[in-house]
Length: 93
Image 1: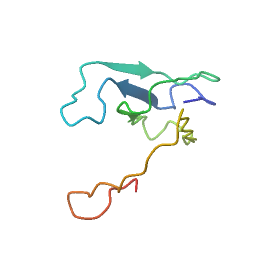
Image 2: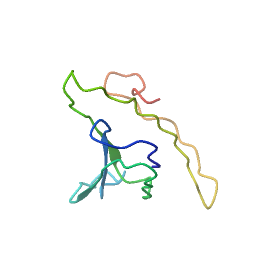
Image 3: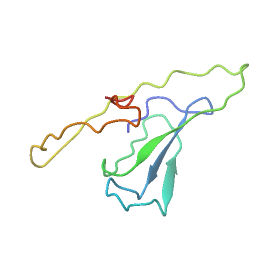
Image 4: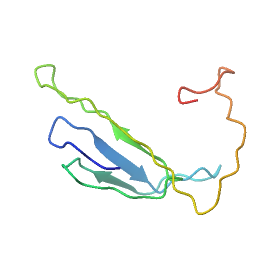
């Protein structure tokens, strides 16, 4: 994650130690506050996301722009996407 903006109007990134293994459960989590020109590097197979910013309506909130780069030492194999509980694909597919 490369932050190009920072401050109280930006959302925090969280990375946990949970991975995609069926029995994996997060035991630890790390928070990274946005700061201009800050970079956050982590293993992309770990559960990670953005904590929603609950700024009041009177505060202006900058939109969050993201760019995902996947770097692999070898070409990853493709597998079929998982089915969502309702039978369709999940929201990110």
